[in-house]
Image (cartoon, rainbow, N blue to C red; front, top):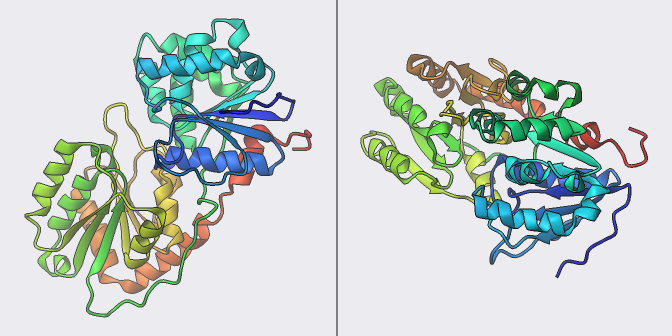
Amino acid sequence: MQNHHSPTSRSVYIITHEFYPKRGGIATFTAEMAKATHETGWDVEVWAQNRGETPEPEWPFRIWRLPLKGTHDFSCQVRLAFHLISRRRELRRSTVYLPEPGPMLTLMLLQRFHAFRPRNLVLTFHGSEILKFYHNPLVRPFARRLIANAAKISTLTNYTRDLLLGHFPEAAPKLLRTPGALRSDFQVSPKPPRSPDSRVAVLTVGRIHPRKGQLETLRALIALPDSVRAKIEYQIAGSSSRPAYEKELKDLASTADFPVMFLGNLSDQELSKAYDHADIFAMTSIDYGNSVEGFGLVYLEASAHGLPIVAHAVGGVSEAVIDGETGFLVAPHDQAGLCAAVTKLVESESLRTILGDTGRIWASKPSWRDSALTLLGSPDGTV
């Protein structure tokens, strides 16, 4: 049973469908922004989807688990709307932060009624939802009204900022940038020594989905010269969300003359070990319909583990990977360019070390505290 607290001027309600135990960039962003907002002095309460049988970690803020799965379907939106209505008096006198599109869709249904408008509404856009809102003629006018009613809006990257302004220019006067950073519990252990005769391990981390580009990477690896293929192995970490795509990927993997390993959905500890045993990180995301790569926190994680990166120059990836300094960016669908980038890294351990060392420094620069202060300030108004 949730014990409700009386709201104050320091109250921030973060409402999300993307939260632990869900994995992924948005879930990480939401949890870390909640922690950072709490640490800067705000009274934070997170409303999140049902966690099922997964044990609840100890959070520094209050959390209310809603009796819903956290999907974007209409029944889930209606159930969330019921809870927003039931606590409308608290929300109306507080800061309400919607860090992802699920609850935005619900508030769009309620915002025409003044009684359901928060005193201070804050939104964060990640990329794909901008296109989905805009290209749905039924949703677009409601999205415009939601943006008009917001006090502040943020994006993680300049790419997403430009995408938002290109489709919803009314966001311009209230737009801020809140870059993602490494998880607050992120740890890197010393890299194990590499055996001279071991294969160069290329690692991809991300759900198995066309947008993540695992097929693009595997096709390029298969197209490498014989002498380079003989030195590599390919490891794919991530849960499957598209069975047909996964089958196509596994069918292609069966034709490769080098080891291809499907690691599945790894825990954070297991994933850390996978990074530590890899030599190159590759995630060649592509635009896929309305789905785009707004940033990609895994690129920062890979850099923090000292891995040089090979990626497509698409979406906000160029703001997570510095071309020629922390890795190589290649135009989407340029297989020859991708092969050349991988070949350089496979053939030169010293180049891998140089790019990896620069990446470690780069990945440590962003700060969740800075992003929280940029978006919400401090509750006493000093920032």
